[in-house]
Image (cartoon, rainbow, N blue to C red; front, side):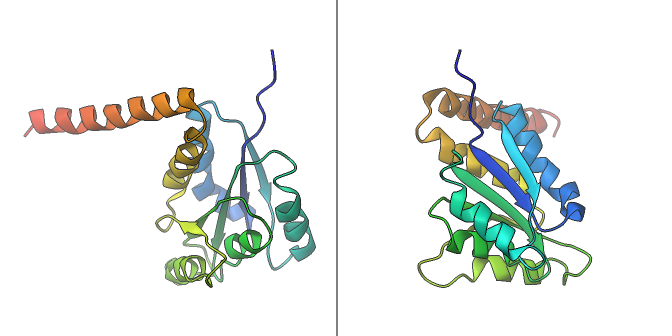
Length: 163
């Protein structure tokens, strides 16, 4: 049996971001998608960041989720050095202005260097978005996402029974 490759890389600027990024890891785990996780700082380890971004496709990654707080350059800098889709997670960190600075850093990319973004501390949605990207070429995963959305609908229907 062929071992499943790691298709999603989750990177973050600091280990303190793990509290938020863990949600992306967990949702990918729930769907049996192996992930690669590493701390890579755009400011403290720029060469490592560029090496990672430039080699990510060759390593078999299909999507990169990058979480960062404060100036939040990690998602954009990684996106500038790869053609893989990058999903940015703005983090409300200790050096952040309630995460707004991080959000603006991630979404205000120049033309030609897109970074998808989720809500501040929205790592769970980053994981789901990565799943949706992977599901475009994976029918089994696509069905799992259909079932997941049906479960969400059922939960809302259940809530309405209590009203």
